[in-house]
Image 1 (tube, one colour):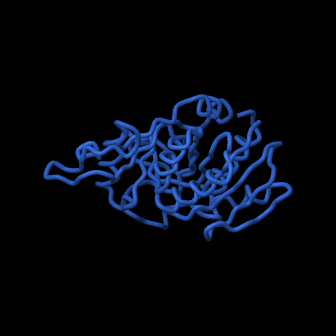
Image 2: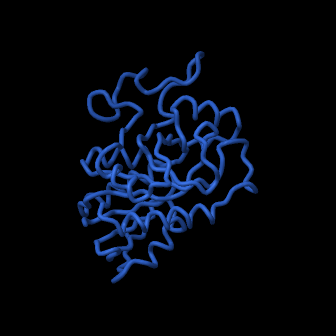
Length: 233
């Protein structure tokens, strides 16, 4: 059934999963807590990376240098873009990840990193990482209720109606987050299959925390993640 590395930005987003880990061993690596053991008949390592692309990339690199999982699962919450049709609490799997604010701001608006002309991955990789593959196909079979679509990763979260509409349209994205593209990037560098599962905690619109449901989204994401970990992926 394979060994799995499970990433979340915060311990809160994987707290329930941690409680389900058997023969649990806790350690600290570079200031980040690692929880290892078994779950669903497989070996797992759960890492809370910290928020943002740099924290995610650093923690994932440390983990991949220490051990080589069969696949990586990122689980957490995200914001639902208006065009994506997802309600708060809905689940989504990434079919591709975009660096949503890596590029150039011009008179004509935002332009992607290809305008700079220096790839961030390979010979022609700029903003997009395609995640389609056997892992995603099998995850869809386990979670048929989940919407599959593009995600956008940003370090400046969209806190206005206008920016949410702009980014959602630009990438055809269903979900905004702060770590996914960085994790997809590192997994591509190491040649490790990557899945990203998120539950929508809010809509990407004018920022209003009173309309959010972080607790419900965190619970929903972990319940779905547990089903994946107990499956034959």
